[in-house]
Structure formats: C-alpha cells, structure tokens
Amino acid sequence: MENEPAHVLLIEDNPGDADLIRLRLVESKSDVLVNCVPRLSDALACLDIETPALVLLDLNLPDSHGAETFRRIMQKVPNVPVVILSGQDDDALANKAVHLGVQDYLIKSEITSKQLERALRYAIERQGLIRSLDITRKQQLEFKNRFLSHVSHELRTPLTCIHQYVTLLLDGLAGPIAPDQMDHLKTVLKSVNQLHAMIRDLLEATRADSGKLRIEPRCIDIGELMRQSVAMMRPSAAEKHVSLEVIVDPAVPLVYADPDRALEVFINLIDNAIKFTPANGSVSVKGSLVETDPTSVYISVMDNGRGIPRECHPQVFERLYQDPDAVDGNRTGLGLGLFIAKEIVVLHGGRMWLASEPGTGSTFSFTLPLYSLSKLLFPIITQQGHLRKDLALVRVELTPISKELRGGWKDTCQHCLEVLRRCIFVDKDLVLPPTGSNGPIQTFFVLASVDMEKVNILMDRIRSQVGKLPQLNSSGSMQVIAERIPPAPVADPRTLEQQVWGIADYVTEVIQQDLWNNPNFTDKENPTNAH
Image (cartoon, rainbow, N blue to C red; front, top):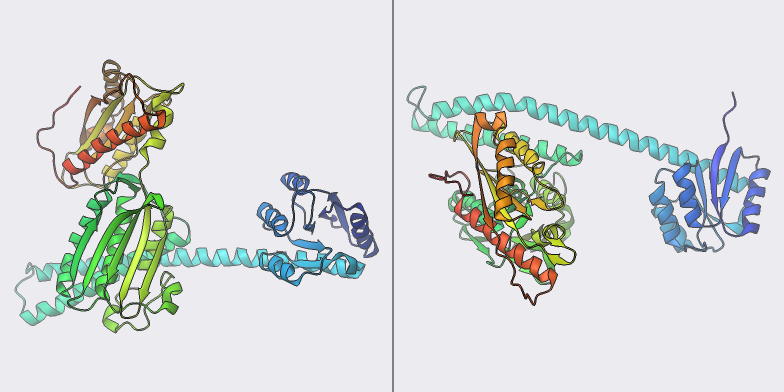
C-alpha cells in the first residue's frame, strides 16, 4: 500500500505567487496535497479542522503582517513545521523567525522546484526529529523524577530509625552516656536532620519539575506569618549572634496565599540570610505596600552580609546552584531552596528577585497577591444596579477533639468545606476562601443575602448536612454563628462600587478580628452558639 500524500497548507493572498508555488511542487514531483487560503483567519479556521504536515506561509497577508503572522501560526500548531515564503531578502527577519522556531526562510523570486522540494522534506524531517527528541527528553525527565522520588522515600525510613535511636540515647533512656559521647551523638543528629532536609528538597524539586507542586491559598494575615517565621529562626540567629527583626506595615490587608508554602519561603530566605551574615550582623524581614502595584504585598528579606556578585545573579534561583565562594560550613544543602521558593511564589502569581552587591549585603524580595474581597462580593450582593437590602455573615468553626492531630483531620475539613458549598444558593450566597493557617481550628465564612430570620434556615441546613458528617462527628465538633451586616444608609451618596467596598471592608475586619482572637494551636474556652 502506497503512502498517502502529505497535506500542505499554503497561506498566500497573491494568486500568481500561489500558482508559482503549485507549479514548483508539480515540477519537483512532490507527493503533496496543497490547500491554499488567502488570509490568516482562514488558515486558523483550517487548522481547527485538520493538522497539516507542513505550513507554507507568506508573512504579509490582508489581515496580518510580519512577525505576528508566524507567531500566531506557531501558537496554533506548535508541532507543525513552518516554512516562510517572503518577497524580501531580510536577514534580520529571517534570523528572528528561525529563533522562534520557523524551519526555513525562502525568497519567492529565487525558489526553484528542487529547492522547494528539499526545503519541505528537510523541514518535515527536522520537525519529526525535534518532536522525537522532545519525547525522549520528557521520558528521561519522568524517569529521573520517579527515580529521585523512589530513592528519597526509601532513604526516609532508615533515617527516621537513626533519628529515633539517637534521640533515645540523647534523652538518656538507654542509660547514662559520657559528655564526649553526647557531643558525638549531637553531631550525628545534626547530620541526620541535614539529610532529612536534603531529601525534602529533592522531593519538592521533583514535584516542581513535574508540575505536581500544589498550593492551597487561604485568606491569611501575612504579618502574623512573618512574625511566626522570625520567631522560629531566632535561635539560629542567636547562635550566630545575628540580630533578626520583622517590620510589617499596618496598612497591609489580608493576603490570599497558602500559609504553609509561604512559611516555607520565609524560612528558606531567612535561613539563607543568617547563614551568609557574619557575627554581629543583622537580618530584617519587611512587608509593605507599593503604590504602583495595589494588588500585591511586597516582602523583602535583607541582610548586611558579604553580598553576591552581579554576574552570579542570573544563576541564584537555578536548581542546584551554590555560592562558589561559600565556605564548606555554609554548604549544608543541595542548592534547591531558592529554586523551590521561587516556584512557590510563581504558583501564587507572584515574582521573586534579588538585589545585591559585594560587601553591601543582599535583599531577596517577592510578591504575594492581596485578598480582593470586593471582586468576589460584587456579583453576589448587588442586584439590578443596587446593593441587596439584607446581608448576613455566617461563621462555621470546626474544632478537633484531640490536640494530637491525625492525618485525616485536614481531609475532614476539606470534605466539610465541599459540603458547605452545596448548602448555599450560588446566586445569593458565597462561601469565602478559607481563613488562617492550616492549624487545628478551621474557620469558614459564608456571606448570605438574607435577613436574620432566613439565615437561621441556612444555619440549620449547615448543621444538618455538615454537622452530621460521620468523619466530623468521630474526630471533631462544629459551631455555627451568624451576625447581621449593617445596612447602608437609605440615602447613600456613595456609588455602588464604593458601597460594595464598604461591605468588603466590614467583612475583612470581622475576619481579621477572628484571626487575631483565634490563633492556631490554641483552644477556645467555653464556646457559645449565637443564632
């Protein structure tokens, strides 16, 4: 059985040039079927129906010109080879096209049948080779990721065993030990903890490479998270006699971020700053707003250490990068921390950058998105160009029975949240993004467009559907309370958008008070229900 002819899409608005290309293909005895269209829009429509073996493209079309023409084609069919047909001998444009992935650049007036046939054949073969190499690269990357993941998991078991027995010896549970033996065991424990950190970074980097690194954004007080990270790192700073401070602009509102992942970024940056700051130096963590970007909070970790040469800046965030001038004592990791930290920030829609000069210290900065409640509320609390008359805020709090959290409590809270979302009317009510960090007590807020009489019906529905879930009853308890949101004045001079902002500010203040009054890992005493 003979091979079917290759399908070629010719995008050419000049009938004479189109006929010339067809003639050259006939002369070369190329086994192809040519479909010719005069416009880019027609070509994009054809590509929706059928994927050709090759695209012959004129750059200047009635509805598109120059580099934008082949950029649009390559976005549409990135795996199809493209050969440009141009009336101009433009080396700069030809180089730009090749760098963007075009296979060849031919001058119409110089095209021969042999040249065209060879260009088509080479373009198809080159694209096939590129595709084959890309598949091989992806397979190798997947194999590498599986291998690293498997090895890392396998190493965890013996390391955990070593950690447990060394801790047992240090605690004196296996009998008294001499002071010098104590020092040796502490060295072993430090090395084990270092290996644990390396394995954790390997797993995180593997997840980042394979696109499996996940975040669970929540409505959080970023200042509290910054203070928590600084408190965690104070012993390390004190050990090196480095001062550590945190400065948070009180005007910073709530942030929409994964608290665990954000804490990971803070710890990594602060740890690096302490590590490369000499004794009696200082490290400061600062959170602030910037007028030119009202959608983000700007966070920076500054030190007055020896700094980083400018030529090293592009490599700092690369995988496995380590400072070539670092002394051996500073090389306690694999050089994955900054790579993982930047990946986490990018997943949040933020960015991370470095400012540093040798001898003046370094400043690592990044952004996280602010929590924009007004955008979420606008379609829910407005109707026909007016603010809804009655609004209420329902608070659902889940508390575990035991202080010793089991792995299933987080899954239980997530299941409760999913059921809670099914309890509301989607056109009138809104379950707000979860608040606070992933601690024991989980709080969810529901904004309901009802009066206090009808909100009791909603609360009863939540109690019956969420409160009676078997996994919640076996591991925790729930309380549901509600409050009326003060209505706007009858003759309110503000615009509708400003009124929504006012509601959003009120709800945000309630959420912030809840975060401040209910810190994670503390129990509320004598909770009472309000209706």
